[in-house]
Image (cartoon, rainbow, N blue to C red; front, side, top):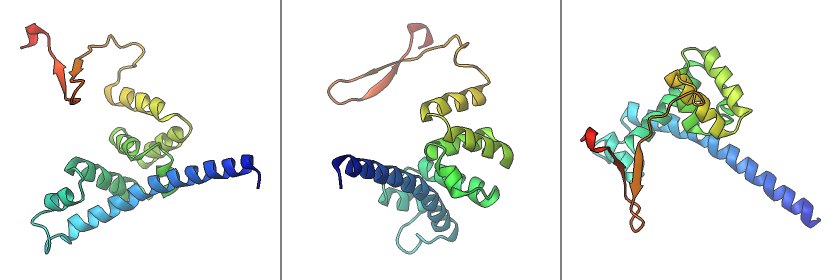
Length: 161
């Protein structure tokens, strides 16, 4: 096998790995929902929150994964491949926040598969706020961070304090 073919195959394997990761978030959402809803954690953990701490996952991330699974798979019955191609589970979550029907969600997912994730995020932000990023007179918030420990904080004008 030539080096070029080996490189090409390696790149294809990475594409497949990425697709499998995106599909796995749906399985994770499904399992988290089952663990939470059926109380499968109860004999070993005091709460679902304690279980999430064990697996080092925030409650907000678990809630979002469950929401994507519940809305897109259970309610809308959309194909997993379509959801996985949206550019990540966070894009899929934002899509359910701006869609009120299966048809709207499907259109967003299909469009997202054709765009860069960054462009999808911009379009989702515009759909949520109703404001075009190009025409917005941005109200910026400054953030500073420590170069030693990377702690971050917002900087407010004196008038806002």
